[in-house]
Image 1 (cartoon, rainbow, N blue to C red):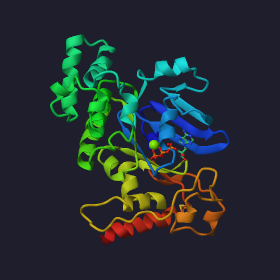
Image 2: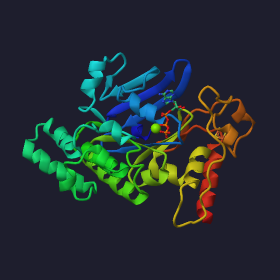
Image 3: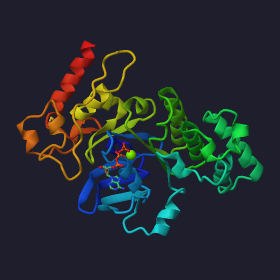
Length: 334
Ligand SMILES: Nc1ncnc2c1ncn2[C@@H]1O[C@H](COP(=O)(O)OP(=O)(O)OP(=O)(O)O)[C@@H](O)[C@H]1O
Ligand code: SF4
Ligand SMILES: [Mg+2]
């Protein structure tokens, strides 16, 4: 991870983390460092293991899933063997999450404004000040007519407005690590970027670490400093966002970047062909080989591991030099 080149110790650290549902391994050896003051984007197609990786940082894996190997540390504390009570103490205080589904974070029985104010009151803010701050936060995240909407229930909000409310709630917290799992998918792209920037700016200004889970490389480009690209349960490329975006070294990253609609270059959208392998149905050698235009014989037999391709930049590909050379050619020609 690029974090190893940064002197600040990680607020959260994963080493060789495997997550399994019984014998079915869905996350296969992830290393991740979340550094105070930085936003790390975790990107990849659906099913690559992004949500489970972030849930493991909260001790909130779904029933049946376990961290079957590796270590998860929060502010230097190994969480192996943590009881439910120990995880509960950590959540909120040290690690908080903005969920993919806003209904999971909102209680249907209480008004939205009250719930935002309540998170402030729990942190010691007085009643009236909490109400005023909640209305202000609702306004900040673009909820129209915030004063009137304070007393509305979650079911009276649209999906997009609920996501904004959950982000307003996240703005009341000050954990060491904020995990945001697709927090803005119900919003249009311009608004997504605006809201994510707001969230990220607050986190980084306050010296908190943030993990932003997304399948949209265009959106994360506007807010993250570091990026980790996930494929079939592994991180296949990682580094500073600028380095990865300008010189991708893994064909999968290249494919994802080529699939980002670029308003400056209409017609450049090239989706990656094929589907990711199902967990348990992994091919021998490199998991990306069946979809990879660069694959050669070695790719069908030897599983590539992450290796340095630049300063703080790693990729797991036997032919990363060719991928980087070609990426540079394409940029130069365009
Ligand atoms: N509760 C569950 N029970 C069984 N399998 C699951 C469960 N949750 C996730 N999985 C499997 O684990 C793998 C990784 O899932 P995960 O939710 O982490 O993917 P993701 O990258 O977050 O995808 P998305 O972009 O769709 O949210 C997938 O193959 C998925 O089918
Ligand atoms: S190792 Fe081979 S198959 Fe895998 S991504 Fe690299 S070139 Fe493609
Ligand atoms: Mg997910």
